[in-house]
Image (cartoon, rainbow, N blue to C red):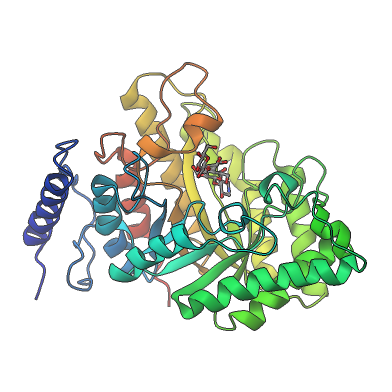
Length: 401
Ligand code: G3I
């Protein structure tokens, strides 16, 4: 069945209305019609609106998606069980990643047990909606992000062997459970200390013989357990001032992986970018030089790139929503135009579709007490200029082979 633009939007609007109705009309919100955006020249698969972000991305050989949370408990969060949020995911996303439910803190209540309940529910929804999943993450190598029991875990008489067993069992269990349903993993997340470029230590790495040995084992194990998956080192080094040591530490880590022939396919560039001032053009001009040099160094080593967690912390901007949203949109467009110039970048994940559920509000509230506006849709699920900017960047991107 060919989807025309009009019938596609009608169908999507119908989806949203019926979804709200099925939720007892709790919010009564139907997805507002999309602003004009570049239509994608090639028709996407049936069921996808031609001017959805996923259709425009697909027309250039790209994929765009978002993180998603577990739901089913009725809580108001960015979950698949929230009909308003699910409508955004179905409209614009061609792939998903779990925001928290695949992390050690979610999967590992104890050193000898797993709890897959929540991640299985997300995976089931993704499969039911034909949405591929990324895996985030197999090891977040910082003490604060490991399970509480890890830092005091007794690794016994042969700590190296016990630590290796713990890490290998974790990765094997996760990768074998989901098989090819997960085609890309953040094998290691945020292992570099941005303040001094060193690698974080944990009780696991102290027992296993150091952070390098730990990270190397994680990647070797993931390659063996998921031989077809893209293996990614994921971090938040970025282009803003103050990131030079973080970029240097990540480069050194990536060079070491290559020197030790560790199977790492790509750098995950989280892209939690931060506006600097209302002068977007000036900000981008000041930031892009060092950032291009960093990305050139990374890709020269043969690493692919993945944008894994895009959102925009709206700092240094006026309180009024219109100029704030405009600046966020222009900053996003400039960043994505730069990133899409790298042909090995094929996947873009947003860290949330709606301002309503962004982690940033709790992490770093606006100094002027204005609500954060970091996502393509606002807290009433209406599309913002940032969404149009993303669509324009996707449409302008050089086509991937
Ligand atoms: O699920 C529990 C809930 O049962 C409990 O009642 C509640 C109160 O303690 O906590 C809930 O877990 C919280 C979880 O989010 C789910 O909401 C954790 O405390 C909280 O720390 C966790 O925050 C997440 C954070 O990573 C740490 O895991 C954020 O939602 C998530 O957006 C953020 O995402 C990270 C990426 O994974 C890595 N890159 C940076 C990015 C932003 O920090």
